[in-house]
Image 1 (cartoon, rainbow over the protein chains, first blue to last red):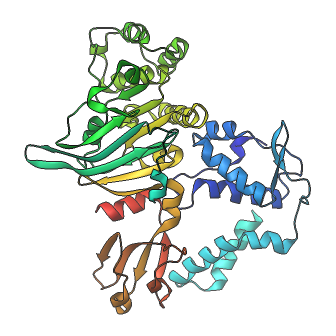
Image 2 (cartoon, rainbow over the protein chains, first blue to last red; image 1 turned 90 degrees about the horizontal axis):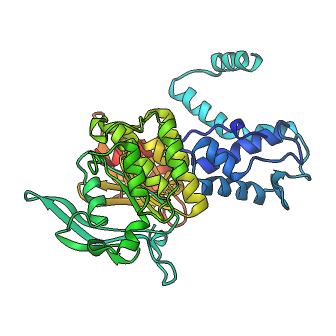
Image 3 (cartoon, rainbow over the protein chains, first blue to last red; image 1 turned 90 degrees about the vertical axis):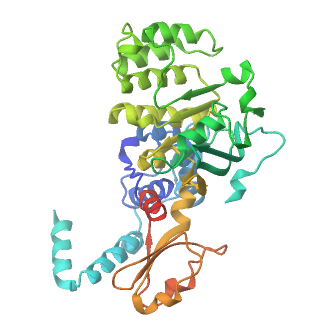
Length: 127
Length: 297
């Protein structure tokens, strides 16, 4: 995996370490990152995105505690072997829950009914 | 919040301020500032123009005598720093003026002799990368170019404590990113302690481990960057519920329709104030920039 695969938005309300864990979770659940695949070093990620290395360490540590990653001696972090490459549809859908809640809230604020929102969403997903 | 400020006998804080006050022509610029930096931390100092950021930095380094209070660098009184302490410290002011009769290269060669860990190779490479003419007199460079040369001077000395006053203003986005990368990696790998002031909040969010908001001469918030984003939010209450607003809030703004916006903090159990669960109430996560604007307005 390359450090450029991660997207960092420093000014988002979500802390950078959470952004990293969230993306790793999605990439692993979706199978873009296979079990055993090595992650870029803390230095590479920090250097590429010009972020504090401690933030990256914190994200990796959290992902390790969650069982997403494991530390390979002498090699660094890798996607945990015990993790199946792709999870069930429900598990993957659960990862989308925060964004769906946010979307639903915005739609209600705009007084949009479900139908046009779903139509647009379907188009976006088909692209 | 204060847990971050923990001091132990074994680690001398590279930079501390106690009760610093200062005033210019009768108006108070600093009204009692306490601040301590842990070794290896990156503290972003933020505040509006005129909030007193440069004055605070200069007073902390002993370049300005405070009206009251005391600043220390590596445990020594800032106003009486030893040569040894000075060699471990690098400061880049907003408008460097020293040694203007030398060329950039001459200045770097000259000051390099005073620093035991001078990285001449870095200085040479970075002059080239930041498109600075090594043989032009410093006096003939634009203010931005002068600050760029001074940033190179500061970084090449491989300091233990690096203090930058608004470094972003002099740099284009590519060079700025490069500076941030240097700051982040040096703090993370060599344990360099960094204090920098800026009004570009996203720079601070990238590399800072902590932020300090300076507002009208006072530090009104001092917190880890991640913590700040997770602890504070904006609570919006419709007019009918605004009487139930919590009394404790960092800022409070009434809108024309009678609704109320407050910046609120989670309590010790990580809960938002009770009013957040009232019907119609809303909690919005805030980026640092929004938080800053809400508080400083």
